[in-house]
Image (tube, rainbow, N blue to C red; front, side, top):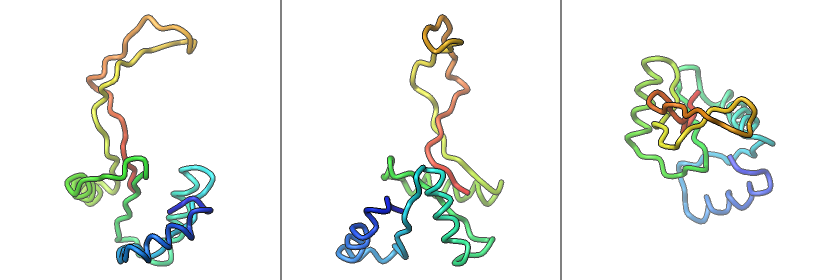
Length: 117
């Protein structure tokens, strides 16, 4: 998946670097959702319902084998998975978007990292 104007450049990188795992570079959409949709539409004719599709955002390009394997295991068990990490930021609650007098406890708050369908 790449921005439409980058597809040719990415294809050149794939060819020049001999990236044999890249089957095709699909042009992305106008949003993350639309890009995922385009990628899944492309895959419809190439894989069957028993295959597992992993979707990973390019903002965090370095993904460990451990995270990938853990998510595949969860997908096999539950049918889907989302990678999440504990929140480390201080979280504030606001009613008006301008002021806050209340902290949100982060003990049970997770931030999503990667989506799998």
